[in-house]
Image 1 (cartoon, rainbow, N blue to C red):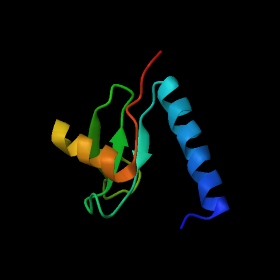
Image 2 (cartoon, helix red, strand yellow):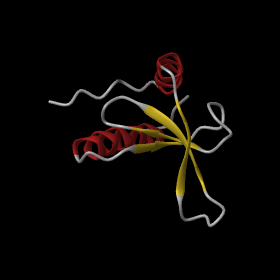
Image 3 (cartoon, rainbow, N blue to C red):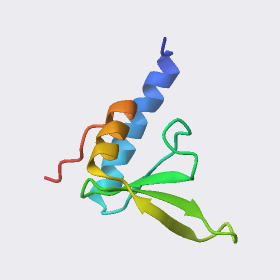
Length: 86
């Protein structure tokens, strides 16, 4: 069961995700059930890439892009609608 606080946080994150896309920036997703390689960047164009930090812990490095099927799975797992640029 989702608490009232968790529900408010989820709503805030949805708004922040859309604001991030509207500015043209990627939104970071982190879920160890989806990838243990690092984190996922979701881009305003709908694409997603697995990213990680370089040894210096400052530089973000692309591991690989996700396939269309993988993206659909991530969206389903995290209940994320596709971004529609108006």
